[in-house]
Image (spheres, one colour):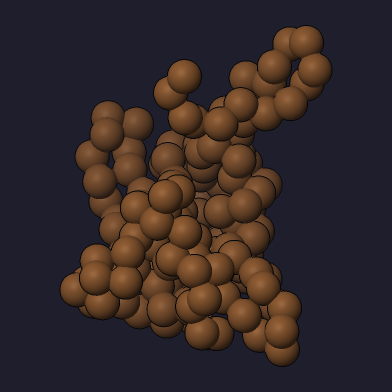
Length: 142
C-alpha cells in the first residue's frame, strides 16, 4: 500500500488540536494473503464530541467481519453507507493536520489500516504497558 501523510495546518498560527481515533477492521484476502482492512473510523474531540464516523469499503473481499472485536456484522455493514479508502483519507485530511495530536489505543494498527502516517501520537497501549512483562494491555474490561 501507498501511505499518505496528513497535511500541514491551514494557518501558520493555528494551535494543534487533539483528536481521539478508533478504527474497526475486517479481515480481507488478496492473492491468498489475509490482512486486516479498515471498515470504520470514528474521531472524537477531547470532550467526547464525535466529529467523524464513517464506514469504509475495503479494496479486497471481506472474509471475516471480526464481529467479536469490531462490532461490525454483515447486516450492520450493509445497512450503513460506506466510502472508499481514498475518499476516507481525503475527508480525514480535512479534519486533522500534521501538527495535531492523535490519541488512541494501539494506533499503529489504526494508522496501518488507514494507510496514513502521523508523527504526533499518544498511544495508550504504549503508555500503560504491563509493568512486569512490558506487554500492551487490551481495552477489554477484566
